[in-house]
Length: 467
RNA sequence: GGCGGCAUAGCCAAGUGGUAAGGCAACGGCCUGCAAAGCCGAUAUUCUCCGGUUCGAAUCCGGAUGCCGCCUCCA
Image (cartoon, rainbow, N blue to C red; front, side, top):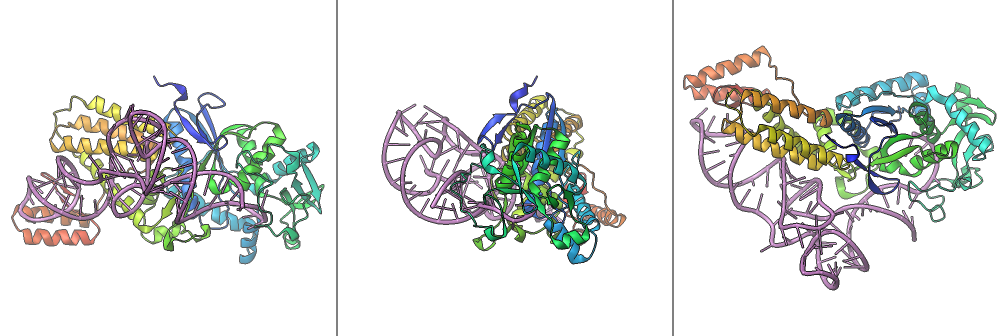
């Protein structure tokens, strides 16, 4: 049987691949930095969530019980600004985007997490953490905001590899607006603005009427749902510094223990147009891509089959390549479904074993999806050849489908639902079959054209006409 | 200025010391009424460039060039 420590991940914390060893054997606790509920998610965020989905699905395929929590930031500058701009309540505003978010995840075939904690519902937990940090001397108040004191915390910078003495101060912060003791300190609780006070967007604390910062939100919710130390924290490379570093510092200062054993960071999606830098905000949203005619399935395929630690350049062309690859996969499944031979292939066991082993070992090796997919396509080619030679029995085909379904419980890109056609399409196909049989190819071609125009591609085989 | 990453066929992309996976596109053939799909075949003597280590390097070391990300407003 399989050994335990076969799975390894590239841990950002140590910058190396390490064997995955869960805190509790047979279980995996995973936290993912979720979205802000103020707009539709863009392709870069989709990538992060498809990635955390692959982590969860693979661990679960490998027999672990996965507990996955993903936060939703619904109480921050952006959501408050969005609600005010529309003149609706914060809750109504964020509810709408949370709803969009969940349906976007579903479209991308992402399995639901076990918990989706919302920041607005966990403010008390955050304030409690702030209080404990204050008591321990890691936090100080300044003009009714509470800051984390980096000088009190020696390990700061380990995750991101940043040397605080060397970074450029004030590059993106207007130093005049802040009153920190040290400009490198970060905010835990931020004093509420007048407009926020008026609308009740604040929480009273001993230090003043405040709002929790993003960093303390993630720290509080991850620990609440997964404990002081959990197995895996997934995030995006652009969030390593300062967010994940700060989150980690809060937890470490608080409990003396690491927040997560393993930190996984997915690379970004970059705009490729014009070769220049593209603002992340400039990336298309999932909604826009779907409106442009890209199926969420091909978007998932494109995102999932790339290696997560390599940046991805967005382009419509690449999504179309994904679409073609999916067609090959669909044709394969279709062909398997229509195998009706009785003669079995004697080495089918070996073939299926090789496929599963190849796939699993590629995925165990830091989720090497390109390699895993190569195994899959290699197998598709071999089976296609055998089917061409009528060396696969119906029973074999069923077993192949079973194995592939197992693999797809990780990848999530196959379409196993049998095609259903409208009566109109069925009638046209019947009519065309009859025309071909009668040798009326002119009519058959006309009907084929008609079907093609309806988006149905027609393939003739010996016995069946289908698409 | 600091830290980090990447450069493999027309495109996408694995491969971290043993003689270049896989996908898309294009080409020749089989099959087909014609197609499509599928199959077969041919496609990088070579991995940005220059040195070095080694019996052996896309893989290790040094250097050059190019591209990219992050560097505490918020998330």
